[in-house]
Amino acid sequence: MAAEFQLDPRLDSDCYRVAELPLCTLLMMNDAQYPWFILVPRRVDVTEIYQLSEVDEAQLWRESRQLSEALMRLFDGDKLNLAALGNMVPQLHLHHIVRYTNDLAWPGPIWGKHQAQPYEEEQAQQRIQLLSAQLGI
Amino acid sequence: MAAEFQLDPRLDSDCYRVAELPLCTLLMMNDAQYPWFILVPRRVDVTEIYQLSEVDEAQLWRESRQLSEALMRLFDGDKLNLAALGNMVPQLHLHHIVRYTNDLAWPGPIWGKHQAQPYEEEQAQQRIQLLSAQLGI
Image (cartoon, rainbow over the protein chains, first blue to last red):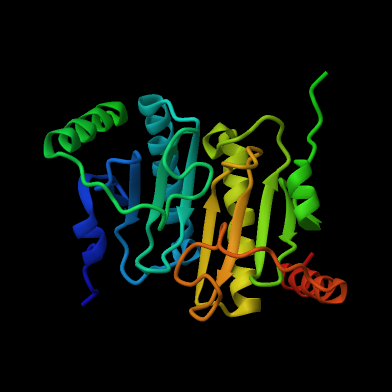
């Protein structure tokens, strides 16, 4: 029997679940310092993008594009940072981070710079609702 | 008259030119600490992936997939890091970095960690030849 997809426990504990898109689980990092969202393809044992089937890869980029456009409309950022690193959490996941020229880590990347600052619950739920509306989901 | 594409001067000075792919200029970062390659779509005034036409975006991911597979075959890395940041150099460019669990910056991202260590000219040319052969170009 094929193994079932399970979200990596670290992603699960560090993030809010926003939505189940056709291929990916959409997460919001619990760090109020940046609008920081993550796509995780629901595929087992995939750590690199090129390990996805071509059909899945095309779907990942469709979902990434929809998310990117929605994030930049909603948060009006100066730049979007997109990255698949996975050095700490090998399960394939794709970061989307809205950046501002006056944010904490600018112009460096955000990883490992400052400790995460968790959202107030109400603030998190509001962000998730705004993004869901922007995505039309 | 439409403006002609010109490689950003900072990318140009920090990198070796490896090849002209159908959409992208393929560069090798002049830093012998990591196998670090960059795809730059030859499109004017594009800073975000979602600003590419859908045809160009699909071609970018085709070239990224070919490059990723070739790099991991050639360098046998533990992980591939893929990122479009562009906080310092706005011209759209996509990093592909082969990572090892014993490399200098592991498990952090490589940006801003250690000063670049330029290649010996012969070593650089050998790497470029090996990759070109692996890419079949």
